[in-house]
Length: 159
Image (cartoon, rainbow, N blue to C red; front, side, top):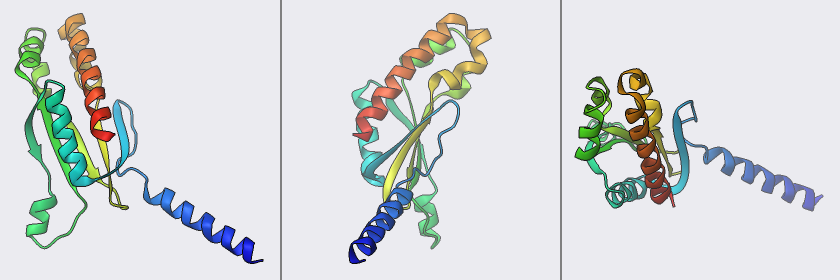
């Protein structure tokens, strides 16, 4: 019986660990969601480095975590980081003025209950899809180019 109790306890621990490691954002259509083992601040820092290394620029950052803390409210880490560059802006504008409302395209870093963090983003192809009729094949090609760059950024930041 002691072996059975130990096995049951081990199984309970494994199930609890697996449940705690679930990403804070659920996968959905048009999104890339990657749970990592990194803590929130490390993922934010690594994301910024990966953005720069892949030729984009952090244009905006926003999140409620610090403001909530200043108000005495403790919430998990939560940051939206908008990235882009002028080359993509000029190229998108040449295809669709309306599509520029989507720039910068954002990454989303969220803290999980176990202290790890999740990196999410809407793929650029998904973001620009509503403008495909206006922007044509050139906008579609730009979005696909950005898809590859965003995937490379996410992969570098998450490892």
